Length: 503
Ligand code: GLU
Image (cartoon, rainbow, N blue to C red; front, side):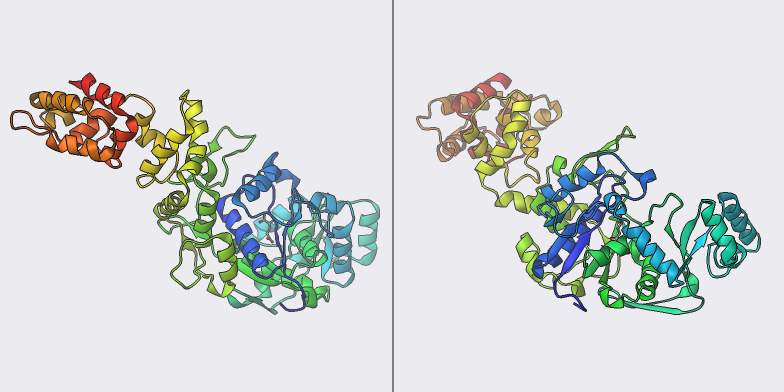
């Protein structure tokens, strides 16, 4: 806990698009950690890069966290707490970022740089020609650029008075060891020569991520920074800033989460993935045509989705895989989060949903299915749908599959699989099914055991009906849940009508 008396964590997405599953997992781990320690979970919107701002993305993030059932207790869209505003564009108006930048300039840890785009381009070209593959503005190149380290104080003052555009850069010291602790990775040591002089304040007065998130983390008394591994390379620069400000006592602990990898283990999951959804809710960027389907729309339950995400990279160390959010929070521990990237297993994800589906009552499933049925123009009783769900439950991963795999409960099936009927020698056996239909018609009570009994007893010229064919005639499918239970639920009239239609 270091110097903090209370756990305060933040999820700090930039509204640059739909939040993908990696981002949701980051939010989830923040949520679980806060819950475990009775702390605060904050949503901060990092919207200082206006060029990447996407309309609707902020609302999407809020809606996604709500659907997932992991609401922050402070922040944009969830009720402000004592550290607002929680949107960086609004925080900028308070002058906070400028203040931090000035403090860094005053203590010599940052400097003004007046280089134009052309000058920067020339520098990159020069370095490339000299054999430097990815040139940076750093302890070497800065010596040959137009900045407050190379210009005289007078020149700098003049440029500032003339409103010459400038940025403020971090002055990274030469050849120093930067060492910091990460709860997941242990001690991380980087030589400062690897770190570039990052821009902290841009020429339009906007802070970059590096400055803004750090100022906010300090002001919002953030105790732990839990974020994706992609931010690990920037962390050494952040450590330098805390040190320069003399605020090491307010430095949060870091936890950089492992990447979520493709099922084949090669690279990060792409949003164009076709084998499984990547977004929690369907997402459409207003500037693009494509719409990406979400876990919600694909039929995942939010509890299942959270369970799936929690176990990507985290292993609680016991054999319990199915957990509620409360159980996850109780067990959550960064010591059990892996460093290495974790493969996403789409089959396992479907399995999780199936487990959650089976736990739901038939009535609950029916309630979810009713709107889909109504959309298709089906009119009927919810209690009937509940019985359908009860039968189909064991066969499906998603409630919606009741409509595809159990379509015959809601409409008369087509029995046009001639190959199947040929294989079953149906033409030669039609009479058997006529006899079966007649015997069923004479049944006084319509219940599965009686239907089964009648089926077993049916015989015509030494031939008996075949279960799979019977199923096919009444459902149009060659497999499904308990055949006689299906027949019972379809009802006597319907079963007889369906058989007779085909003979
Ligand atoms: N705004 C950053 C992002 O979009 C936040 C990174 C952090 O958590 O420090 O992921």
